[in-house]
Image (cartoon, rainbow, N blue to C red; front, side):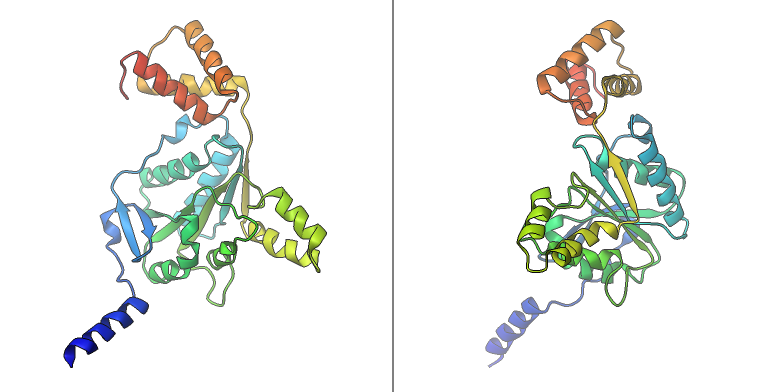
Amino acid sequence: MSEPLDRIAEALERLAPAPLAAPDFSAAHAFVWQTGPDALVPVAEVNRVPLELLVGIRRARDTLLANTRQFANGYPANNALLWGARGMGKSSLVKAVHAQILEDGQNLKIVELQREDLPSVGRLLALLRDVPERFVLYCDDLSFSHDDQHYKSLKAVLDGGIEGRPENVLLYATSNRRHLMPRDMIENEQSSGINPGEAVEEKVSLSDRFGLWLGFHPCDQDAYLAMIDGYCENAGLKIDPAQLRAEAIEWQATRGSRSGRVAWQFFCDLAGRHNHSF
């Protein structure tokens, strides 16, 4: 008789698992939120570049750094949407700002949240709500397709819901789209809906819930070359300036674009060819 009861108990446990115990937040400064089962996995070393190497985004850098310092010091701060050109340092800036806050002596945690896991965000917020630490939730490459309902879950992180956003949680998201959805999605809603204005308003209102909109635009050649110079100087790699400039311009021409990512890829190739590690 006990064996069937045990199987029933195990099945009920899978359907309604016990609440996740609060992890040891002293184990790391960075965590990744995973589901199935829920877990906050500590990250021993975050993949990031120093803040001073992010060239050409001074205004966004200073604004996000000031906002994060306010939050880390216990003062009001805004959720931030970093949007714009790909490869221009949106995600790098979030991680570099977090590193700078740690260097300043503040105990700020960063938690990476995948877009696919947005429906579980309520459980994550419940886990973070009543602990003394302060958290930046970081969602990279955030966007929504035509039939995607995940955006409704995200409103709970911002300012929706009866409980509101926990005072110790802030959201930073990056996206190539200012309104987090394709332009044709907005146009289709406007042209085909019974009440198109309301349909568009519901989706666009999500980006409006971010207090900071920080735009990232394609860089010019001078900024691109300055990025490479900064990488070389930081790594102690000495190359003839004329040769470096010629090779860097040829590299971006073969790629058909200029960005911080292209500059970093050229630098990695350059360092490898010169047997230089960093």
